[in-house]
Image (cartoon, rainbow, N blue to C red; front, side):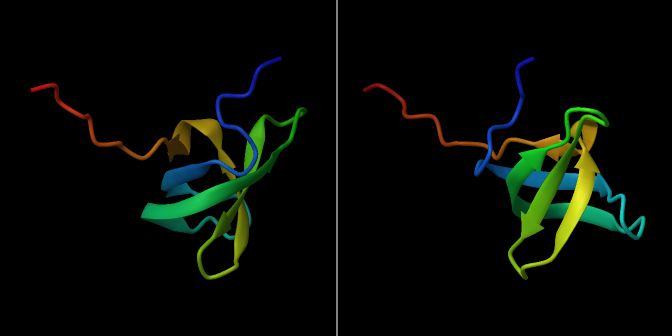
Length: 69
């Protein structure tokens, strides 16, 4: 199957983590790997903590759109 987020991709987390049930409010992180059975992602945050997060709580950061002149 295809993954929505690739390994090493930068994402924004807005939702609950699996380890402690902690709520992450728009925290930036990177995807480490995806569990094929539970279909959740292992995420590494900037402070080197890791947590499992469901796909519905992950978002791709917005990129600026270059406008043509």
